[in-house]
Length: 121
Image (cartoon, rainbow, N blue to C red; front, top):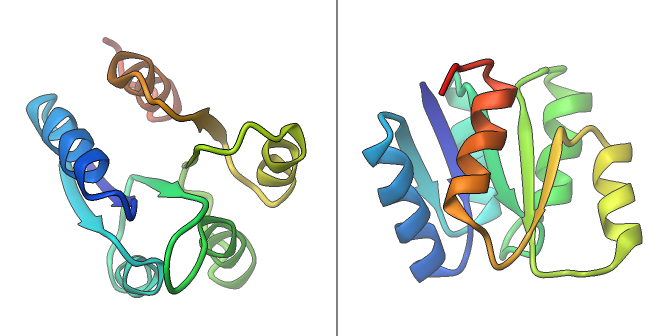
């Protein structure tokens, strides 16, 4: 299973990538939303993990583009440090499948990924 991880926090991106790879996933990681979107256009991913606030293009813009422009149903999980309820509601309105507030529990993230990808743990 191939996951794209778009997160501008280097430590979080690298640690999540390491964790997911240790669970058998292939992870392409990007610190810039524009670069991540270009990769999404060129590759087939089984899941998109994206932070909301990133340089270049935001996670919300990535989600909207994936749903409306390329009409993809690939599962999308939005990560954010925002505790604002409206942000979470907006994420679901534009097509996100899951919303996880930071700090992120890798174990909880894995359960949600497995659920979306219908993988038995």
